[in-house]
Image (cartoon, rainbow, N blue to C red; front, side, top):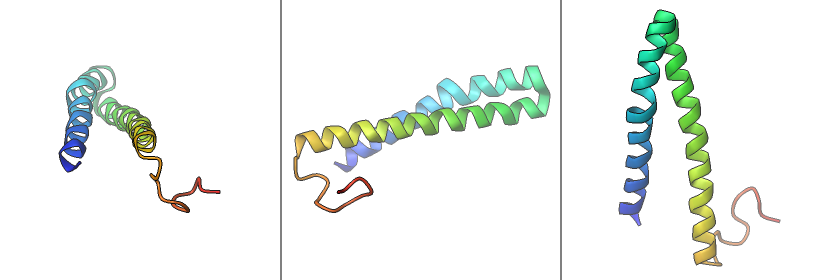
Length: 80
């Protein structure tokens, strides 16, 4: 299971840096100088944060489907 976690983390980080951070920093620098660089970083962090939340929700849904005992009774904020 830990190898799978590492794969998910690595993939998310590659998306963050390669697909979003570098291009948005370049565009931000050309459009708004130093403020544009910070805006590009902010946009990257917000986008990847939202993607990460979606990803975790999806993985947890898959885990709960594969194992009906997951999560344990009374665990988490959604328990009744």
